[in-house]
Length: 183
Length: 212
Image: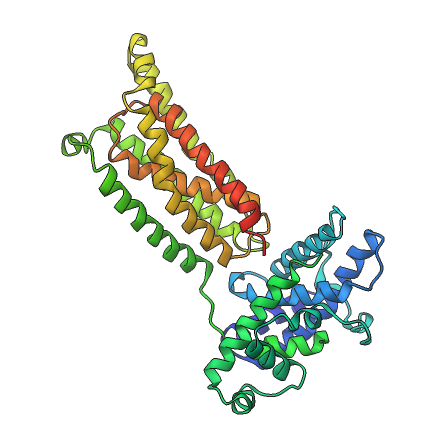
Protein backbone atom coordinates (compact mmCIF):
# COMPACT_ATOMS: atom_id res chain seq x y z
CA UNK A 1 0.00 0.00 0.00
CA UNK A 2 2.74 2.47 0.95
CA UNK A 3 4.59 1.34 -2.12
CA UNK A 4 1.64 2.32 -4.29
CA UNK A 5 1.44 5.72 -2.64
CA UNK A 6 5.16 6.25 -3.17
CA UNK A 7 4.68 5.31 -6.79
CA UNK A 8 1.80 7.81 -7.11
CA UNK A 9 3.92 10.58 -5.64
CA UNK A 10 6.73 9.72 -8.03
CA UNK A 11 4.38 9.82 -11.02
CA UNK A 12 2.98 13.17 -9.89
CA UNK A 13 6.46 14.64 -9.49
CA UNK A 14 7.27 13.57 -13.03
CA UNK A 15 3.94 14.92 -14.25
CA UNK A 16 4.59 18.33 -12.70
CA UNK A 17 7.98 18.30 -14.43
CA UNK A 18 6.07 17.92 -17.71
CA UNK A 19 6.07 14.14 -18.29
CA UNK A 20 2.57 13.65 -19.69
CA UNK A 21 2.91 9.87 -20.05
CA UNK A 22 3.60 9.55 -16.31
CA UNK A 23 0.65 11.85 -15.67
CA UNK A 24 -1.71 9.80 -17.82
CA UNK A 25 -0.62 6.67 -15.98
CA UNK A 26 -1.24 8.32 -12.62
CA UNK A 27 -4.73 9.51 -13.55
CA UNK A 28 -5.63 6.08 -14.95
CA UNK A 29 -4.46 4.52 -11.70
CA UNK A 30 -6.39 6.99 -9.56
CA UNK A 31 -9.69 6.85 -11.46
CA UNK A 32 -10.86 3.46 -10.10
CA UNK A 33 -10.10 4.55 -6.53
CA UNK A 34 -12.06 7.77 -7.01
CA UNK A 35 -14.90 5.76 -8.52
CA UNK A 36 -14.99 3.40 -5.54
CA UNK A 37 -15.05 6.33 -3.12
CA UNK A 38 -17.82 8.08 -5.06
CA UNK A 39 -19.85 4.88 -5.18
CA UNK A 40 -19.61 4.47 -1.42
CA UNK A 41 -20.68 8.08 -0.93
CA UNK A 42 -23.71 7.74 -3.17
CA UNK A 43 -24.66 4.44 -1.59
CA UNK A 44 -24.51 6.09 1.84
CA UNK A 45 -26.93 8.76 0.58
CA UNK A 46 -29.18 6.06 -0.80
CA UNK A 47 -28.58 7.17 -4.39
CA UNK A 48 -27.82 4.90 -7.28
CA UNK A 49 -24.64 4.79 -9.31
CA UNK A 50 -26.01 6.83 -12.21
CA UNK A 51 -24.17 10.02 -11.28
CA UNK A 52 -21.04 8.46 -9.86
CA UNK A 53 -19.04 8.99 -13.02
CA UNK A 54 -19.93 12.69 -12.97
CA UNK A 55 -18.23 13.01 -9.62
CA UNK A 56 -15.22 11.01 -10.85
CA UNK A 57 -14.82 13.42 -13.75
CA UNK A 58 -15.27 16.44 -11.55
CA UNK A 59 -12.67 15.12 -9.11
CA UNK A 60 -10.17 14.35 -11.88
CA UNK A 61 -10.58 17.89 -13.19
CA UNK A 62 -10.04 19.27 -9.69
CA UNK A 63 -6.93 17.15 -9.18
CA UNK A 64 -5.63 18.42 -12.48
CA UNK A 65 -6.36 22.11 -12.00
CA UNK A 66 -5.15 22.14 -8.38
CA UNK A 67 -2.08 19.91 -8.78
CA UNK A 68 0.19 22.82 -7.87
CA UNK A 69 -1.27 22.76 -4.34
CA UNK A 70 0.35 19.40 -3.66
CA UNK A 71 3.54 19.72 -1.63
CA UNK A 72 6.00 17.57 -3.58
CA UNK A 73 7.76 16.51 -0.37
CA UNK A 74 4.52 15.18 1.17
CA UNK A 75 2.77 11.90 0.31
CA UNK A 76 0.14 12.15 -2.43
CA UNK A 77 -2.52 10.03 -0.73
CA UNK A 78 -3.81 12.52 1.87
CA UNK A 79 -3.95 15.27 -0.77
CA UNK A 80 -5.98 13.16 -3.20
CA UNK A 81 -8.24 11.99 -0.37
CA UNK A 82 -8.95 15.57 0.75
CA UNK A 83 -9.85 16.66 -2.79
CA UNK A 84 -11.99 13.58 -3.31
CA UNK A 85 -13.87 14.10 -0.05
CA UNK A 86 -14.41 17.76 -0.88
CA UNK A 87 -15.79 17.06 -4.36
CA UNK A 88 -17.95 14.19 -3.17
CA UNK A 89 -19.45 16.10 -0.25
CA UNK A 90 -20.12 19.04 -2.58
CA UNK A 91 -21.76 16.83 -5.20
CA UNK A 92 -24.00 15.24 -2.60
CA UNK A 93 -24.84 18.60 -1.06
CA UNK A 94 -25.96 19.91 -4.45
CA UNK A 95 -28.32 16.95 -4.55
CA UNK A 96 -29.68 17.76 -1.13
CA UNK A 97 -27.66 15.41 1.07
CA UNK A 98 -25.62 16.71 3.96
CA UNK A 99 -23.55 13.76 4.97
CA UNK A 100 -20.04 13.08 6.07
CA UNK A 101 -18.23 10.80 3.68
CA UNK A 102 -15.24 9.08 5.20
CA UNK A 103 -12.72 8.41 2.45
CA UNK A 104 -10.79 5.23 3.09
CA UNK A 105 -7.31 4.64 1.95
CA UNK A 106 -7.58 5.07 -1.80
CA UNK A 107 -4.48 3.03 -2.41
CA UNK A 108 -6.27 -0.07 -1.13
CA UNK A 109 -8.84 -0.09 -3.91
CA UNK A 110 -8.17 -2.68 -6.56
CA UNK A 111 -8.64 -1.13 -10.00
CA UNK A 112 -10.14 -4.31 -11.48
CA UNK A 113 -13.16 -4.04 -9.20
CA UNK A 114 -14.27 -0.65 -10.44
CA UNK A 115 -14.24 -0.43 -14.21
CA UNK A 116 -15.64 2.63 -15.93
CA UNK A 117 -19.35 2.14 -16.61
CA UNK A 118 -20.24 1.32 -20.21
CA UNK A 119 -21.28 4.39 -22.13
CA UNK A 120 -24.94 5.10 -22.56
CA UNK A 121 -25.20 7.74 -19.92
CA UNK A 122 -24.10 11.14 -21.17
CA UNK A 123 -21.58 12.20 -18.57
CA UNK A 124 -20.92 15.52 -16.94
CA UNK A 125 -18.09 16.69 -19.18
CA UNK A 126 -19.97 15.79 -22.34
CA UNK A 127 -23.09 17.63 -21.21
CA UNK A 128 -21.13 20.82 -20.58
CA UNK A 129 -18.83 20.72 -23.57
CA UNK A 130 -21.27 22.52 -25.84
CA UNK A 131 -21.33 25.55 -23.57
CA UNK A 132 -17.63 26.25 -24.20
CA UNK A 133 -16.43 28.83 -26.73
CA UNK A 134 -15.95 27.30 -30.18
CA UNK A 135 -12.16 26.97 -30.19
CA UNK A 136 -11.97 25.53 -26.69
CA UNK A 137 -14.67 23.04 -27.59
CA UNK A 138 -12.93 22.03 -30.81
CA UNK A 139 -9.58 21.59 -29.06
CA UNK A 140 -10.94 19.60 -26.10
CA UNK A 141 -12.98 17.39 -28.42
CA UNK A 142 -10.10 16.71 -30.83
CA UNK A 143 -7.63 15.83 -28.08
CA UNK A 144 -9.97 13.95 -25.78
CA UNK A 145 -12.45 12.22 -28.05
CA UNK A 146 -10.41 11.75 -31.20
CA UNK A 147 -7.07 11.35 -29.44
CA UNK A 148 -5.33 13.81 -31.73
CA UNK A 149 -1.99 15.30 -30.64
CA UNK A 150 -1.53 18.98 -29.83
CA UNK A 151 0.60 19.47 -32.95
CA UNK A 152 -2.01 17.88 -35.18
CA UNK A 153 -4.84 19.85 -33.58
CA UNK A 154 -2.88 23.01 -34.29
CA UNK A 155 -2.49 22.10 -37.96
CA UNK A 156 -6.12 21.14 -38.23
CA UNK A 157 -7.38 24.42 -36.78
CA UNK A 158 -4.57 26.40 -38.44
CA UNK A 159 -3.45 28.02 -35.18
CA UNK A 160 -0.17 27.80 -33.26
CA UNK A 161 0.53 24.97 -30.82
CA UNK A 162 0.70 27.57 -28.07
CA UNK A 163 -2.83 28.68 -28.90
CA UNK A 164 -4.01 25.07 -28.72
CA UNK A 165 -2.38 24.63 -25.30
CA UNK A 166 -4.01 27.80 -24.00
CA UNK A 167 -7.42 26.82 -25.39
CA UNK A 168 -7.09 23.34 -23.87
CA UNK A 169 -6.18 24.67 -20.44
CA UNK A 170 -8.91 27.32 -20.46
CA UNK A 171 -11.44 24.81 -21.73
CA UNK A 172 -10.65 22.41 -18.90
CA UNK A 173 -10.84 25.20 -16.32
CA UNK A 174 -14.20 26.33 -17.74
CA UNK A 175 -15.51 22.76 -17.63
CA UNK A 176 -14.50 22.41 -13.98
CA UNK A 177 -16.39 25.61 -13.18
CA UNK A 178 -19.52 24.39 -14.96
CA UNK A 179 -19.40 20.95 -13.38
CA UNK A 180 -19.34 22.55 -9.95
CA UNK A 181 -22.64 24.26 -10.66
CA UNK A 182 -24.82 21.37 -11.77
CA UNK A 183 -28.32 21.44 -10.27
CA UNK B 1 -17.18 12.00 -23.12
CA UNK B 2 -15.84 9.03 -21.28
CA UNK B 3 -13.55 9.38 -18.29
CA UNK B 4 -10.82 7.66 -20.30
CA UNK B 5 -11.06 10.43 -22.86
CA UNK B 6 -11.11 13.16 -20.25
CA UNK B 7 -7.87 11.74 -18.84
CA UNK B 8 -6.35 12.04 -22.31
CA UNK B 9 -7.19 15.75 -22.40
CA UNK B 10 -5.87 16.29 -18.87
CA UNK B 11 -2.53 14.63 -19.68
CA UNK B 12 -2.16 16.75 -22.80
CA UNK B 13 -2.36 19.75 -20.47
CA UNK B 14 0.30 18.39 -18.08
CA UNK B 15 2.96 20.81 -19.23
CA UNK B 16 1.00 23.92 -18.20
CA UNK B 17 2.96 25.60 -15.42
CA UNK B 18 0.97 26.84 -12.46
CA UNK B 19 2.10 29.20 -9.72
CA UNK B 20 2.88 27.51 -6.40
CA UNK B 21 0.68 28.40 -3.44
CA UNK B 22 3.50 30.23 -1.67
CA UNK B 23 4.32 32.33 -4.70
CA UNK B 24 0.65 33.15 -5.30
CA UNK B 25 0.36 34.50 -1.74
CA UNK B 26 3.64 36.42 -2.06
CA UNK B 27 2.63 38.12 -5.32
CA UNK B 28 -0.93 38.89 -4.26
CA UNK B 29 0.07 40.24 -0.85
CA UNK B 30 2.80 42.39 -2.37
CA UNK B 31 0.20 43.98 -4.65
CA UNK B 32 -2.30 44.37 -1.79
CA UNK B 33 0.37 45.88 0.48
CA UNK B 34 1.31 48.37 -2.23
CA UNK B 35 -2.29 49.58 -2.48
CA UNK B 36 -2.61 49.76 1.31
CA UNK B 37 0.69 51.69 1.54
CA UNK B 38 -0.49 54.24 -1.02
CA UNK B 39 -3.77 54.60 0.86
CA UNK B 40 -1.78 55.12 4.07
CA UNK B 41 0.50 57.71 2.46
CA UNK B 42 -2.38 59.65 0.94
CA UNK B 43 -4.84 59.57 3.84
CA UNK B 44 -2.79 59.11 7.02
CA UNK B 45 1.01 59.33 6.95
CA UNK B 46 3.23 58.48 9.93
CA UNK B 47 2.61 60.15 13.27
CA UNK B 48 4.63 63.36 13.57
CA UNK B 49 6.77 62.17 16.49
CA UNK B 50 7.61 58.79 14.95
CA UNK B 51 11.38 59.42 15.11
CA UNK B 52 11.12 60.09 18.83
CA UNK B 53 8.91 57.13 19.74
CA UNK B 54 10.64 54.72 17.35
CA UNK B 55 12.25 52.86 20.25
CA UNK B 56 9.45 53.28 22.77
CA UNK B 57 8.47 49.81 24.01
CA UNK B 58 4.71 50.52 24.08
CA UNK B 59 4.84 51.78 20.51
CA UNK B 60 6.96 48.86 19.29
CA UNK B 61 4.73 46.42 21.14
CA UNK B 62 1.87 47.31 18.79
CA UNK B 63 3.99 46.32 15.79
CA UNK B 64 5.01 43.07 17.43
CA UNK B 65 1.44 42.02 18.25
CA UNK B 66 -0.02 42.87 14.84
CA UNK B 67 2.87 41.37 12.88
CA UNK B 68 2.86 38.18 14.98
CA UNK B 69 -0.85 37.88 14.23
CA UNK B 70 -0.22 38.37 10.50
CA UNK B 71 2.68 35.90 10.44
CA UNK B 72 0.80 33.11 12.22
CA UNK B 73 -2.28 33.71 10.05
CA UNK B 74 -0.13 33.54 6.91
CA UNK B 75 1.46 30.27 8.01
CA UNK B 76 -2.01 28.82 8.66
CA UNK B 77 -3.34 30.19 5.35
CA UNK B 78 -0.56 28.49 3.38
CA UNK B 79 -1.65 25.18 4.90
CA UNK B 80 -5.39 25.76 4.52
CA UNK B 81 -4.78 26.39 0.82
CA UNK B 82 -3.40 22.86 0.40
CA UNK B 83 -5.85 19.94 0.67
CA UNK B 84 -4.88 17.42 3.33
CA UNK B 85 -2.15 19.59 4.87
CA UNK B 86 -1.64 19.55 8.64
CA UNK B 87 -3.16 22.70 10.16
CA UNK B 88 -3.39 21.97 13.89
CA UNK B 89 -0.04 23.48 14.89
CA UNK B 90 -0.57 26.84 13.23
CA UNK B 91 -4.19 27.00 14.32
CA UNK B 92 -2.95 26.84 17.92
CA UNK B 93 -0.15 29.30 17.10
CA UNK B 94 -2.83 31.88 16.22
CA UNK B 95 -3.28 32.26 19.98
CA UNK B 96 0.23 33.71 20.39
CA UNK B 97 -0.72 37.27 19.35
CA UNK B 98 -3.77 37.49 21.68
CA UNK B 99 -1.67 36.03 24.51
CA UNK B 100 1.05 38.63 23.95
CA UNK B 101 -1.58 41.32 23.98
CA UNK B 102 -3.05 39.94 27.20
CA UNK B 103 0.42 40.10 28.79
CA UNK B 104 0.72 43.70 27.59
CA UNK B 105 -2.60 44.54 29.21
CA UNK B 106 -1.52 42.93 32.50
CA UNK B 107 1.74 44.91 32.42
CA UNK B 108 -0.16 48.12 31.69
CA UNK B 109 -2.52 47.51 34.60
CA UNK B 110 0.42 46.71 36.89
CA UNK B 111 2.51 49.76 36.02
CA UNK B 112 0.02 52.56 35.39
CA UNK B 113 -2.25 54.16 37.99
CA UNK B 114 -5.85 52.99 37.81
CA UNK B 115 -7.04 56.54 37.30
CA UNK B 116 -5.53 56.61 33.78
CA UNK B 117 -7.00 53.30 32.62
CA UNK B 118 -10.30 54.65 31.34
CA UNK B 119 -8.65 57.48 29.47
CA UNK B 120 -6.00 55.20 27.95
CA UNK B 121 -8.58 52.65 26.87
CA UNK B 122 -10.67 55.25 25.12
CA UNK B 123 -7.63 56.91 23.60
CA UNK B 124 -7.78 59.92 21.34
CA UNK B 125 -8.53 58.40 17.96
CA UNK B 126 -10.57 55.25 18.41
CA UNK B 127 -12.93 56.18 15.60
CA UNK B 128 -9.93 56.63 13.30
CA UNK B 129 -8.69 53.21 14.34
CA UNK B 130 -12.06 51.61 13.62
CA UNK B 131 -12.21 53.31 10.24
CA UNK B 132 -8.70 53.00 8.93
CA UNK B 133 -7.63 49.57 10.14
CA UNK B 134 -10.46 47.95 8.11
CA UNK B 135 -9.90 50.35 5.20
CA UNK B 136 -6.16 49.58 5.01
CA UNK B 137 -6.99 45.87 5.37
CA UNK B 138 -9.47 45.67 2.51
CA UNK B 139 -6.90 45.58 -0.35
CA UNK B 140 -4.90 43.03 1.64
CA UNK B 141 -8.02 40.95 2.23
CA UNK B 142 -8.81 41.02 -1.48
CA UNK B 143 -5.24 39.92 -2.19
CA UNK B 144 -5.35 37.05 0.31
CA UNK B 145 -8.70 35.86 -1.08
CA UNK B 146 -7.36 35.92 -4.65
CA UNK B 147 -4.34 33.90 -3.52
CA UNK B 148 -6.66 31.44 -1.76
CA UNK B 149 -8.71 31.06 -4.94
CA UNK B 150 -5.57 29.97 -6.70
CA UNK B 151 -5.08 27.40 -3.95
CA UNK B 152 -7.60 24.75 -2.97
CA UNK B 153 -9.09 25.48 0.48
CA UNK B 154 -11.43 22.68 1.48
CA UNK B 155 -12.97 24.88 4.22
CA UNK B 156 -13.96 28.10 2.42
CA UNK B 157 -15.44 30.05 5.34
CA UNK B 158 -12.54 29.22 7.65
CA UNK B 159 -10.02 30.06 4.94
CA UNK B 160 -11.79 33.38 4.34
CA UNK B 161 -11.70 34.18 8.07
CA UNK B 162 -7.97 33.40 8.24
CA UNK B 163 -7.47 35.63 5.20
CA UNK B 164 -9.28 38.28 7.26
CA UNK B 165 -6.94 37.79 10.25
CA UNK B 166 -3.94 38.00 7.95
CA UNK B 167 -5.21 41.15 6.23
CA UNK B 168 -6.37 42.65 9.53
CA UNK B 169 -2.98 42.01 11.12
CA UNK B 170 -1.09 43.59 8.22
CA UNK B 171 -3.51 46.50 7.89
CA UNK B 172 -3.28 47.15 11.65
CA UNK B 173 0.54 46.98 11.53
CA UNK B 174 0.45 49.69 8.90
CA UNK B 175 -1.97 51.79 10.94
CA UNK B 176 0.34 51.51 13.96
CA UNK B 177 2.77 53.90 12.24
CA UNK B 178 0.07 56.57 12.35
CA UNK B 179 -1.65 55.74 15.63
CA UNK B 180 -0.69 57.81 18.68
CA UNK B 181 -2.63 55.70 21.17
CA UNK B 182 0.05 53.44 22.58
CA UNK B 183 -1.70 51.84 25.54
CA UNK B 184 -2.22 48.06 25.29
CA UNK B 185 -5.68 48.78 26.71
CA UNK B 186 -6.44 50.76 23.55
CA UNK B 187 -4.97 48.08 21.26
CA UNK B 188 -6.82 45.27 23.04
CA UNK B 189 -10.10 47.10 22.58
CA UNK B 190 -10.17 48.99 19.30
CA UNK B 191 -7.64 47.07 17.23
CA UNK B 192 -9.37 43.86 18.27
CA UNK B 193 -12.78 45.14 17.19
CA UNK B 194 -11.39 46.39 13.86
CA UNK B 195 -9.53 43.16 13.08
CA UNK B 196 -12.53 41.08 14.15
CA UNK B 197 -14.62 43.00 11.64
CA UNK B 198 -12.18 42.23 8.83
CA UNK B 199 -12.15 38.58 9.92
CA UNK B 200 -15.93 38.29 9.81
CA UNK B 201 -15.98 39.97 6.40
CA UNK B 202 -13.32 37.52 5.16
CA UNK B 203 -15.32 34.57 6.43
CA UNK B 204 -18.53 35.75 4.78
CA UNK B 205 -16.90 36.48 1.43
CA UNK B 206 -14.77 33.34 1.60
CA UNK B 207 -17.80 31.14 2.07
CA UNK B 208 -18.94 32.00 -1.43
CA UNK B 209 -15.78 33.10 -3.19
CA UNK B 210 -13.49 30.25 -2.13
CA UNK B 211 -15.53 27.32 -3.41
CA UNK B 212 -13.90 25.46 -6.28
